[in-house]
Structures are given as structure tokens and as C-alpha cells.
Length: 258
Length: 317
Image (cartoon, rainbow over all chains, first blue to last red; front, side, top):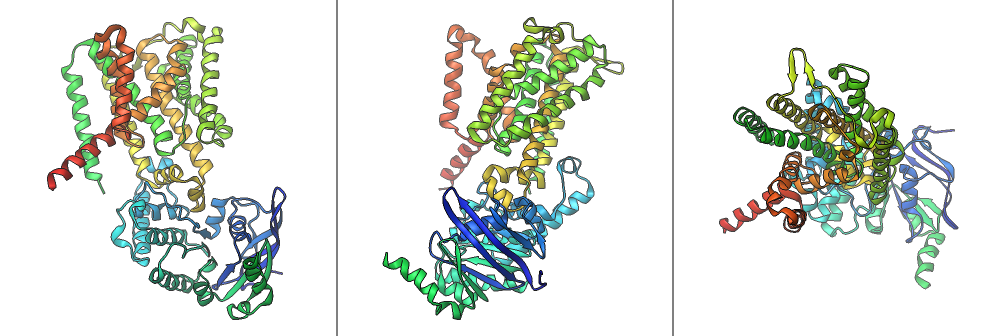
């Protein structure tokens, strides 16, 4: 059944909170090395779907498969290790830690040093630490924030914190990167830069699922758009086709008429 | 980064310990400094859990007590050599922490506080009521002194150097953990457990690990305490003792290795200095703790650094 070109398969996902059906029968695949935009009015279930994919809570029914392998029974941190990384809608940096340390925590799944190792400080641990710091510096270079490595992450302007969070997610060497409204709170030039950055990330062979309210950004960078409304998938097509889709227009305009 | 500053701090610290141990002959002062050492161990152990990982424990004296009682029972009732009782004492506390930690660490915030509080009370009651084993409320008498080979750790000086060497080792150990991958992951849990998990930190496992480590260090302090005073009673390991350890951490400075030393020193020395106030002793004690928290809310270590920074900035202008 599973096709090699699909990195993530979302199969028949249902999720209810009490009496509210947050997700109903969600079913789509993410193409490898593509950018998929996930859009929909507020409360459509986008963030809920993110949480189901990353394992914050389990789906009531259905399956999430990464590269043909079910991740349903995996905890959040295990899914990161398997290659699913994410950013948060309202930026969740470790604010008492420096920018560099934030990236180093991002490298957690790609390093091995345990508690006893850290006390005994074997040469291999020193080497690992050195390599981790080098990799972290590269990632900060990638988002153009190398000069801010020793600063406390909360001292950075919001837009830059976003970039740190992206770099931190990249540190886990993910196969799939979930970006939850990465452009929220960014100005126009920052948003343009973010678009370029997302393209560069995709070019490194990382599949991207993007939730975003900035339509011009989403439409311009996505290879495919999935539209959710009230917990259901109402469209899945190219950006151009989705823009003229009647169900999509109804969902957005219908909301406006209320 | 500040590796050098760290090494200098250790060197100064080691030198101070050697000088004090060498120059001070007064048994009372030696005893006082030994207690500062034991309290530093306790504060340090709780600081790893509370200051760095952000998990509160209001029952830490239980592990201190387990360390003390296990060695007391083994060395006195069963005549085991103290050096063999040490791994048993520390190991028991760690094992208990592991079993208690699995359900308790699912809680967070106030609930974790309540959970650990309950645990501390249960252990205290066991010490007091299981008389056949622990000597009950009247305490456990006749614990032998520590002997390592030909050296008997009975005199104040010997014990002073023993305790402070252990403190030094534990300081280095904690510093190394904090500066490593594990330490960063711990601090990330403090800043945001959700985000920590989302970058791949196994938060449950790590919290349990640090809880077990912390219990082990507290038990080590308990072991040293038992062989120092030869007599232990449940009162030493009560709820009040747990709160005192928390106070040391908060006053000294959360998430600060040296803060543990400062907090422990202040809370050990204050009652001694305040004898002059006789019946007002506790009032003055409380007032001092309150003022520290009001004027240096981040604790002594950070507080002093903050004041220094402000002073430097105002002079630059």
C-alpha cells in the first residue's frame, strides 16, 4: 500500500474533545521533499492535527505513518528521534538559556552523552560536545544569527526568536518539519526571508508541513495545499486550483457572512 | 566558556577549605563547618532537582533520613563495616526514589509538592514507629565512627576534611552534569516541558534520573551525619527539615551550584549568631530570610551579582 514517494501518511484520523469533533476522517499524504500548506479558518483543527502527528495526544482512530512505519505508539520524544520536528505557534524557546544552548538542546536526539558520561567526561564525550557545538554554530549561521549565540534567547526580538526555533528544530536532523504559523508576528521583509529559508530547508531534503494564515506566503511556497474546515478536509490540490475551489471559498466566505 | 573561572573558583574553594581545616582548632567551629558541609550537600542535591530541573520536593529530608538510618541499622545492629554500609545507604535511597518517582513525577507544580510532602511524612512516621528497627521516637544510639583502613574519622579535623572533600567532589560532579547535554536537557524541562519533549528530550526518564541522583546525594549526607553524631532520631528528618533544605536552595539561589554553599552556610550560621537575641531569635531569623527574598529575589548568588552589575553600570555613566 505505502508508496515510496510519501513520507508521511495521515490515515483516517479522528479526534474528539468531549462532544466536540476536532478532527473527522482526515486523510492525506505528504510527498517527500515537498512543501504542503495546511490552511483553514480558525478552529478548523490545524493545530490539533499537528499535535496528533507529533504525538502530544493520541488520535481516537486512524494512523500516522512515517516512511511506511506506524508511529501511533510512539511518544513525542521518540517521534523526534524518528524524524518529526516542529515549531510552535507562539514560539516556545527555553528562555533562561542562551541562543546557542537552545540549539544544543535541539541536538539532544543526535547526541548520546548520559548522566554518568557527563560526570566522567570521557574523551568521546568531549568530542561529541565539540561536534555538537560546531553543528549548532552552523545552524545559527544558516539562520543568520551566529553573532547572537551567547545571548539569552528571550532578549532577542520576536522575529529572531522564530528563526532560533526553526534552527532548533533543524538541529534534530528531521525528515519532516512541521511549522505552526511561522510568519505570525513577522513584518513583510522578515516574512519574505522566512519564505526563502523554508525553500532552503526543503532543498536540504526535508519535507515540510506548514500551517500559515499569511495566504500570499502559503500560496507562493507550497507545492500542495490541504484545506480543513470544522475538522474535515474539504480540499487537497495545487495552490492555484485550491484558490478557485468552491468548497474552499464557501468555507472562508461563509465564515465572513456569519 | 567560563571554564577558567570555574577552575579558579574550585582552587579558591579548595584553598579555603585547607586553610580553615588547618588553622581552626576550636572543636565548636569545626563542628559548625562540618554541618555547613552536610547542609551544602543537601542543598546541592535538592538544587539539581528544584533549581535546574524545576521539580519541587518537599520531602527531601526523607532521603537524608534513609541514608542515616540504613547505615545506623547496618553498622550497629548487624555490625557491617561502615564502608560497606555506604553503598547500601545510598543505594536504598536511590531505589526508594525510583519507586516513588515513577508515580509522583507525573505530577507537577503544587501537586508534586503535595506528593513529595506526603512521602516525606510517611518516611518520618516509619522512622518513628518502627521501633524494633529504628529505635522509635527516642532515637538510635551507638552508631560507630567511620573507619577507613587505619584512619578513624572521630576527631573534628578528620571529619572536617572528609566532609568537605565529599562536598568538593559533589560540586564538581554537579557542575559537570549541568554543563553537559544532560544538564541542558534538565534546564530545558524547567523552561518548558512541552517544548523540551518536542525537541526530543525524554522528560519523564530524565526527571526520574535526576530525582534518583538527588536522593542518592541526600542519602550520602545522611550517612555522613549518622557517623558524625553517633545518635540519630526521627525529628532530624521531619517535615521541618525538608522545608529547611528548600529554604537553603531558595535563599542561596536556584540553579546555582555555589548558591547551595551560600544558602547552607547562611542557614547553618544564622541560628548561631542570633543566640544574642535570645527570645527574639526566631523573629529576627524570619525577618532576615524575608528581607533576602524581598531585596534579592533571585537568591544570594544572583542577587549579589545583580547588585555588582548595577554598581558597575552606574559608574560607567
